[in-house]
Length: 287
Ligand code: 13P
Image (cartoon, rainbow, N blue to C red; front, side, top):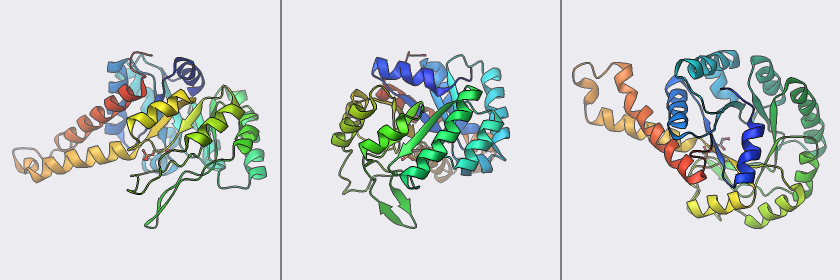
């Protein structure tokens, strides 16, 4: 069933585990994630970036696909359909398209502007019964070939945003999207602890889940992280399995070129990655 992220994250925060938010990019991706969540009895969040939404011919198409898949595959675990790193306009579109949750990423605005825009979106989400995530301190990552180290959010700014009535807060603690560079300093637990002290019970969100070592994941969960976003790791495992299939010449054997056969190893690889993450995050059996 399609639900908001709010209740699942409050349960996760109290139970000291985290719910995985896995980005979906196409039908295979979505199906693999949903089937794995159902098999492991884990709640799950399907993240959709604006780029992926456009690729899948718009947010309304995504909502229809996810709802139909939940019904056809008989998925009974809680599923949230969530906009990942949304712009203000993107948030409005997803609200209209029937998403159950949005993220407004106002981290690149001056704090006053982030506060104003977040406040407006909180009011709309309250009215519609949707959940909303906000961000303070931008998450690093590769842009134009330059890998930026993640920022550390200001705990006081985190409190200002948390007090607006959001349901979950993404705060930069040195995390970055994509692969971590060899000289990465690791997560700043000092910053995370300071943020948690300011925002109290607010479920915290850790972006850039790809490649974060298990001990850091566990420590982050102990300090209030209840949602962990993973994207690149599913992309990497999908690409590796597809490459292996082609390099073994399987697409040239019989009807191995049939896209249903060609995409199958990648879809299986995503299931394995999602399973490993759900086990690491502790969400298995928590549906
Ligand atoms: P990764 O691609 O590094 O796993 O990050 C995913 C993410 O945080 C999406 O918002």
